[in-house]
Length: 438
Ligand SMILES: *Cc1c(COP(=O)(O)O)cnc(C)c1O
Image (cartoon, rainbow, N blue to C red; front, side, top):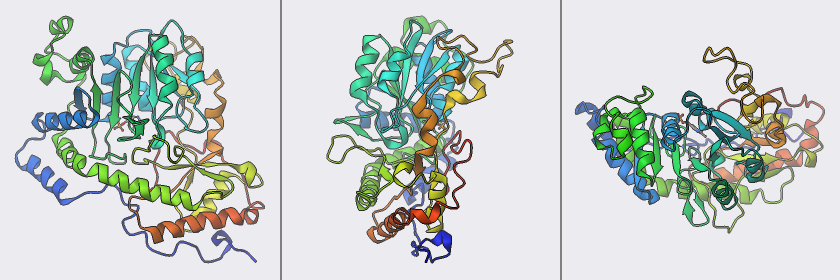
């Protein structure tokens, strides 16, 4: 007698999820804010964006905020802001979205990938330290899928080697690490604010820093309309035209939505936190699956639980592949997908593709570590078979969450039913970006 829906039994999740998985959460005030911008013909101004920047920076206790048209641009500004240029190396975790590091290529910089910590999925501080050479200028820290990186280890290593720290906070807006908000530890932080992220305002991004020179350099790169406000002497002579030729102004429909989002965001992530923690508490002690969250009762919190992940332990379930496990979950009515971001160092872009007609590939053999695809980053390379996506609950509806947890528990309890039809994980089961149907 089969017990699992994938084998023909009725599925566990019977209730309609309602709006529990719907994202982003849009209210009337956001609608009105957008119409106001539209009707005033004020899409390309900076007055609303400046108000948003001020409030977003104040929320973090930071001095300068610079709104950008997306998170990729905010990170490009951050990299130029701290002075990365020709031949400089930055160290970036291999498991992340490409925009954490790739903007550096147009600055003439090189990317050296580092491995991730198998528990946090953020940069492994020891491997990061091994990748430091005299050419290293900065490290990029990504607080991956809502979870803060190990800043207590990372910051002293960076400071000891005189490196700048760029925080990519595109996955963890509002996360707290030991009493302090992420995005406030390093020299500069970049945030994506696009629609699928926790702090969702449309296409948009923001850079935060406490350093005026960093801010001014970011302004000279991509914000020509603010050049008269630059106070850093050596930049003033070149004001008027954007250095590098970029235009990164934020659309004011986005910043208008951002001002409204700031009002409701803390309450939203508190409810998400309650819902997600409830889900995982119900699964305490279940074999094969573990939450990707900080230890309960610690002073580290998830920032909105963007793209929530579960650790998967096939060795506890008779070697069952995560792909087959997720198929069974889907059949029970639980949206889930194996894997996360693919390991970037394996992409041919960094080893064999001649993007800039230089007669040699990007990074070529020129980083201190040679061809990127020859690097050995064992955790990053093995992670796709040990991770899957779980539903992102935006509301604390305990009865619905209980149904989802019961479905997960049922699949674990009956995993043996799945072993005979397990075809394993396909090659490249992650993706170059995280997209997920809910
Ligand atoms: C989404 C994302 C970005 C880029 O942001 P966009 O707004 O999409 O340009 C950068 N880093 C990470 C980790 C991201 O997930």
